[in-house]
Image (cartoon, rainbow over all chains, first blue to last red; front, side, top):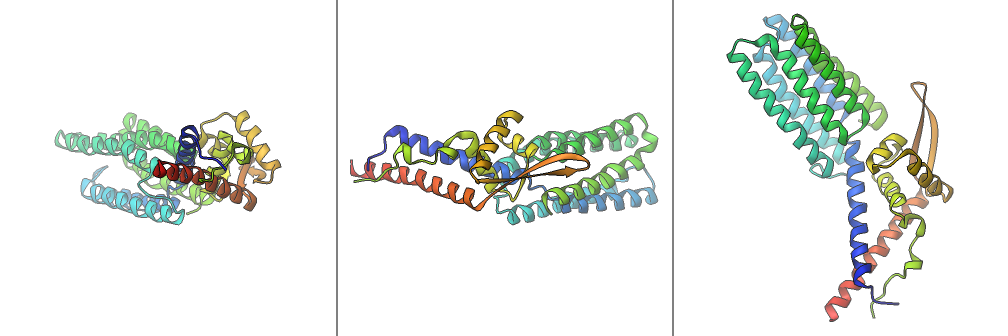
Length: 193
Length: 107
C-alpha cells in the first residue's frame, strides 16, 4: 500500500489517454460505410444516365441534387456504422477526414460555378473527379487502404476526363457510379456494412 | 491510507506501449488485418510481428492466417483473456489516479 507519486499519476493519465486515442483511431479507421458507398454509386449511375438523356455531359440540374443527396446519404450511413461499432462519430479520425474533404468539396463547388459561367462545362467531369479523387486519397490516409486505392482510381479517371473530355459522361458514370459500388462492396466484405 | 498499484503488480505484457496499442486497437474492432493494425499504430512490420507474437503466446490475441485474392492475409482478434487483461490494466490505472486524487484531497 502506498501513495502514488506525481510521476505515477502522470504516467497513468498518459496511458489512459493513449488507450482512448488508439481505440478511437482503430474504431473510426474501419467506420467508413461500405453500404453508403454502394448507395452513392447507385445514385451516381442514375445521375450519369439522366444527365446523358437530358443533354450535356454534366447537367447541373441533375448533378447538384445528386451531390447533395450523396453527401447526406454518406453522413447517415457513416453515422449508422459508427453507432454499430460504438464509436463517437465526431471523434479523432472522422473529424480529420471531414477537414481534409471539406476544402476539396468547397473548391469543387466554386470551380463548378466559375466553369459554368465561363461556358467551359466540358471541363466539369475532370474537375469533379480530380478534386474528389484528391480529397478521397488524402482522407484515405486515415482509413483502410481500399479508400486510398479508390481515391487513386478517381484521380486517374479525372486525368482521363481532362485529356479526353469527349468521354466525360462515361468517366463520370465510372467514377461516381462503378468505382463507388465496387469499393463499397469490398468494404462490406472486408470490414462489415 | 490510499491504495496504489506497485509497479511490479502491473501486467508487464501489456504495459509495454506497442503491445498496449495492439490490445487497445483490437478491443475496438472484431478483427484487424496486419496491414491495418500496422497503420493504426504507425509501426514497422518487424516491430508489430514481434509484439503480436508475444501477445499470441500469452493467449491475449488469436492470429488467423489465410489468403485473400491469392495473397496471404493475417488477421488478429482479441481473446477473452486479452480483453480481461486490458480491463484489469485499465482498472489499475484508474486506481492509481483515484489514490492520487484522495491524497490530494487530504493534503
